[in-house]
Length: 423
Image (cartoon, rainbow, N blue to C red; front, top):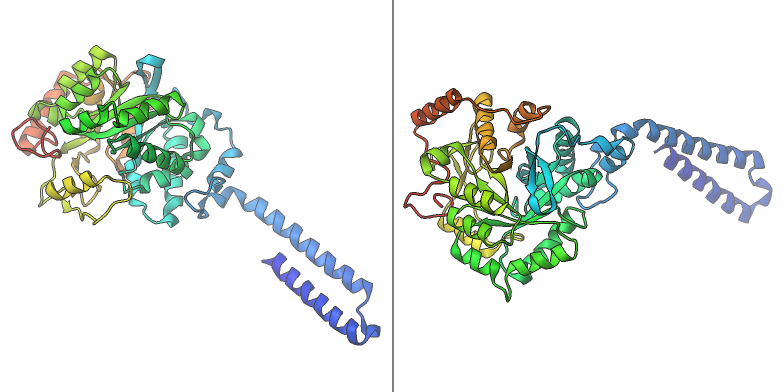
């Protein structure tokens, strides 16, 4: 502001000088006045430069457009030694992609939590959340999907993660099942995440036989997109997430995938009969497993959850998914915005996460999709060389707890149909 004021004043001085020179040359200002003006401008520029230098450490909260590459966060990170951020040894690590001997830490960042930041002005909140996860919690594994907030989560994650991209494992997904649609979705995701490759790309939310058949169709299935992108270096590995145990087993047995995301949840396992078949198949075929919904108690009801309004059109979500949301309505937690009821007792939540990680075949967990519950889980696991084991007494206590709550498992093998009810 000082510089601008000085420049405007000096410009006005020159206008006056030119006008007067055209009329009465004898009244032209002296050279000393011109020199004074130059000194004023130079001093203002020097003062502003010093001020900006002193304020630069606090510059990270200034808003920038979501796709602006040279973000304040990037400038801030470049002033630090980010080669040790995050620390790759901060958490226990396990083999994830057998083909390339790739390991990842046992805890990932639930980028779905960023889906609530729908306004570009909230980019700084996303920046702070990711910075906290990486620098304070030392999290290295990030997972996102365009379906989270209809593109919002990946748009917020891209700029926030950009300074640390080469130091993290980044996974994304697509719900599109055809070659043409999944190809475009992949390009959109790469642009939003501001990266030239993904460490893992996954088919999202496989629930039906039709999903599997469309994906694996040799003529126009989405698997064609994945394999081409892998050959081109745009993705490093192929995986999927599923809400159906039979469909997950089929995908694993195809021999075409490296990883699987599936609900490995205490209540669903013990009272819904879901999870063991997937783990057995994954172990047999050398497929890494990410445990989804590990921190869930169970399903929400129309009384305990809030109804989701389904728009007339999505930008990043297929029409079939919109129709599913209409015919199988989903409710969300009014407190945590998850579509299931998370365990919010810190001690019990940690037990649920440990139980999932204690299951043979599980590589890592993604915690509930809310930032409010992340720190406690991270504090439990960070600094450990191995995942702590639950005792038999702990497990029996968990069984009694959830039996008394009379909770309906988030997934189960009962006869009620619907992808959000049973598998």
